Image (cartoon, rainbow, N blue to C red; front, side, top):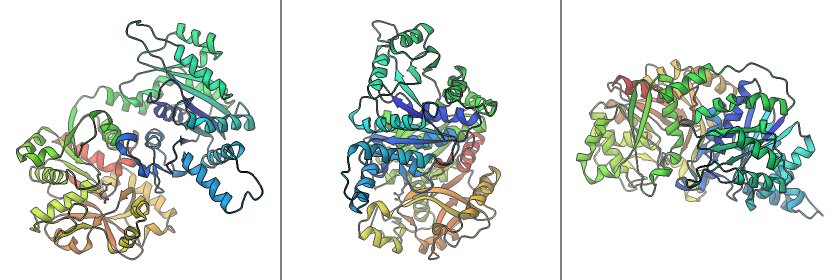
Length: 567
Ligand code: GLN
């Protein structure tokens, strides 16, 4: 097992996560099995209770973790499912130590920051890396931050323990070009290196983020002032798509240099042709689709919008690239439809509409109005989680004649609680084990023969892949008494479900439930809906965006984009 530690310098937000994911992709392409660990120095145990508008989207893992969105980047690049233990927070480290101390495991000892904290950090890193050739470790924050000091101490200690050829450190910095000087400045990078040196760490590589490419003069300058070999100073200029980053690194032979630094033997000649082709589709598409994502965007400035829905955004991009088109995404605030229904006509300007996941009552009536509009006007629709629940509510109201139908999340007193908390979940909520009240992580669903959903999962190869996984997981309770015919797995993060009492009336009126999960107690949880006569009207209780990667797009997104192209 070899470790590549990625640390940030100068400023945050320069794409350390993308750099880490790209390095992982490169090592994978060179034939090494690779995983990635994200370290978040906050005290929160996980990201489940963080504000998405501040921290970005909450990423959900197969095993039900609510994690920092960087794990999503790793999966989108590596195309491999990363478990929740690959996200380490200070909260977890301290909780583990305090729990063990209370259990008497340190009897007689003083439990201290040094060595107990770094030891626990190292234990977690090694555990997450079990079975892989290469483990990437991204340390959140910026060198010099008080809160990531224990982590740097731990990775330095890992280097001492395992040797330099087994643990290397990469510093990602930023080189500003002050507009009045017009010259790229290396000083902040030199200072960041120095600060890392103070933690006992000498970076093996420096990735220099900047608006433009770094020239040799600047590489030499950093070498002269910081004693880092100019050959190991890698230029990382701004790109128009993140998927270009590994290609840029490879242009500087980063893969070969890492292999040499880690004293590895090259395993395989990388083949970037598929990746390059997809990047080309993203950068210069022959045709552009206009797609609207209708949500409630109060309190979210334009800036953080994409971060809050990054997986949906990327899943659209993956699907479009694989379908050979480009996608222009517009964020449409559902509240504008509540103010004036005339505004709904703007939806005619789009090839397709997505209603993504969401929580709470705000903006819900606007989303329902938008869903009615696209259903009636035969505009391709993809509903994700809340986007499925509200599509069922809309159908119950306007087609089944159940006036006032609703989700109890929006109207607890509704006469027709189409979407509701199931009785078996109620005690969990009543005892306010709030964090535990969600359906989280991968659940298997059986798909109905003859449906579009089944067809999409089959033709993309996902059905076959997931069936194999399910066969191996069959002892896991959450699978319930599953019909093992056409089953697949998607990730979940929600509390409410389609109320089984209304399934009959909805089906009689023409909406098809194309798949369901069966709980241990026999309750069927609806996972997919579709409208057979519609161009594309498909929604799911799951979050298929969490299982989309550039080279393997999510089936429902691919089907959606293809329908948009036909429109
Ligand atoms: N608010 C809904 C629920 O809790 C949907 C959640 C979501 O869209 N992620 O069930």
